Length: 224
Image (cartoon, helix red, strand yellow):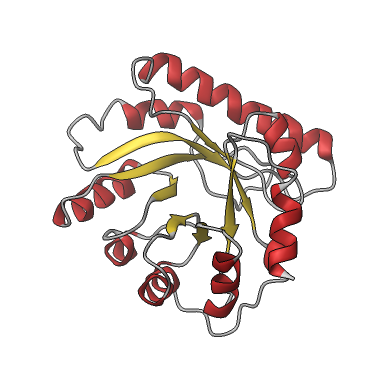
């Protein structure tokens, strides 16, 4: 089923948009099945769960951390994480920088923006992001490569499209103001199982698809 789902979804995702298989709460066997079907980008939202899966799965997997990241958990993923999608404060970015330095790495990161109507979602606003970017010149082991956002959990596709459009506008503004001469600032992470088609239309370069690949989540026995 996982292989069939991947084949079907890939047919709907045009280049250069890339598919992240959101494997949080899923057993290693499911990830291995997706890997065997050619999937290499996997997204997790718990640091310890990602660490444990990384230890037993193939080395060429590109691990993306997509959840809210606690400072005391950064050390578990710093040795190997490819991209952290959820930077929402200067403090967490500074922590990532320190932990990356211990492993002589530069970790790519996305700034997470609050674009949804729900107050419970994390993320920066544009002013906060600009303030963060103006104070991170002394960080040498992190690299901001784009933005991330989560749309409102709703069936109102007009609202969802508007929120994705807002994130794309923020990306364009930041690229012009802070990253005009830095081509690596190129990623927009938005879109999940129910709305990734709209996200692609609005400019997403990374879509985070979980249940459409693996089925419903299982929250039992998950470490944080």
